[in-house]
Length: 166
Image (cartoon, rainbow, N blue to C red; front, side, top):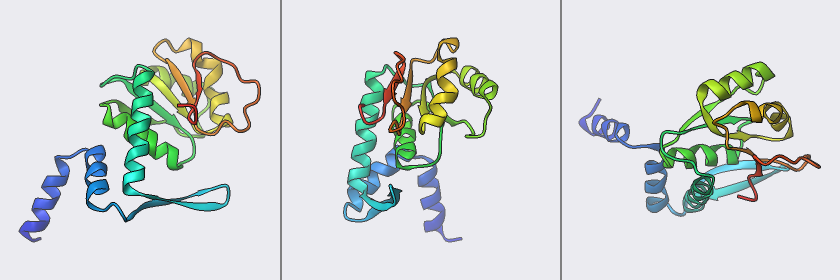
């Protein structure tokens, strides 16, 4: 292994994922950060647009009262918004953890309570349906954010928010 490779690894170990995102956005603004499928079509995000979405989501989390050291649980299928929420919470110093999509209601309640989640990110209606009945039994939980709420008709709960509305 060369000295340059060792130096690069050591440099990377000293940086957070949000720091690396900002660096990439400034050094490679025309490169594609990722492609994701949305309703059958692929979308491309360049690094600056990706960093902007993360920053705007962090600002939205701030309005929900998220502080450094608090926890954010994410449950759902991996999608663009999942990654954006993860990096946004990390950029604020929050601790992010995932809950398996196959978790039972009892497991979701235990992991949300034991993990101390103040915000719960739910991929869609399926995951909202798992957390919503438990929302008032988890004292630290302030907000449930639904990434895809397209099938959620007549859902009303003070903690429930739409990712799009953030």
